[in-house]
Image 1 (cartoon, one colour):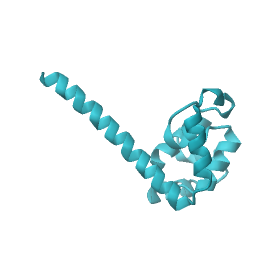
Image 2 (cartoon, helix red, strand yellow):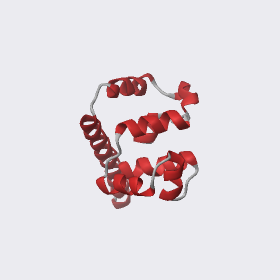
Image 3 (cartoon, rainbow, N blue to C red):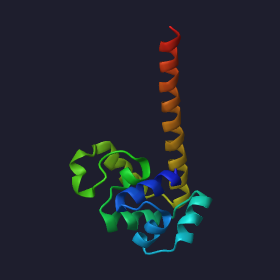
Image 4 (cartoon, rainbow, N blue to C red):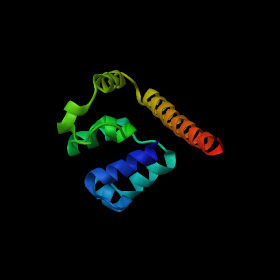
Length: 122
């Protein structure tokens, strides 16, 4: 999941490389490399990024909803509640939520592929 978050960060700032992303974040490329290799991004960095670039945390973390924080009217009440609940979690719990969501997305994608295969075999 951190890999996808980093890709969405690049998209949000118009960066094509980790070097460009690091400049946009005011950090070193090695920091981005460390996040990628540890498969973990400090939650406070995600929050700061979202504030700095007016990016929706829901979009950045989960890839759903509008990217721009100024367009929150498209966000459902359930997603807003999820963000509120996540504010009370520590970083380890947030990582577990991210793992669960990633697994859920993979399962959903596999179920879709299975349905398509069944149609093909019928």
